[in-house]
Length: 241
Image (cartoon, rainbow, N blue to C red):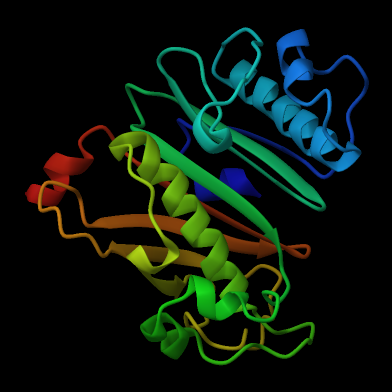
């Protein structure tokens, strides 16, 4: 699913498996999760198995993927990428830095956000656009979850470029559907599965030297919301034009 959200020069790999065989991790990766609970180890290992497949798609040999600040994956020189994992879906997306400046992906279960989280991660203007929480029905789109996922993708794209962390209230997102519905509606006759579209993130920053917008795509499929954003090396120049 994630490959449908990114251009052809981004190598993607995904799995629905919750576990991978023993020996999947490199020793230095094993050391990072040696004391972790089983779920954390499984999330870590399955995402890195996807990363190795994405590396192969770029013609790269498999290498360990360690992590830096706040768990950010550390990629080989000249490579940019992103990992995501949730119950039922894990994915990796990698690209050559000469083609893609930065990218971010995220996957979430297609379900309402927990009580109280919606208000913490959305702006009043966003809540007005996406409307009230959707009912638990097969045809409903949980726009609060789509929005949460899209912000995660935006933040993962933003940080490697600027070195700055964004708060959930520092990006204002607008959604559009490309499958015949309207961004923020209740799913329409097509229902949630197969719904997809684009989003625009307006970054609410005061530094005029920083770009102010990011664009991405979203899709709902088989109970999973997936989102992705990326920027090309000429991102700053294209905004100034």
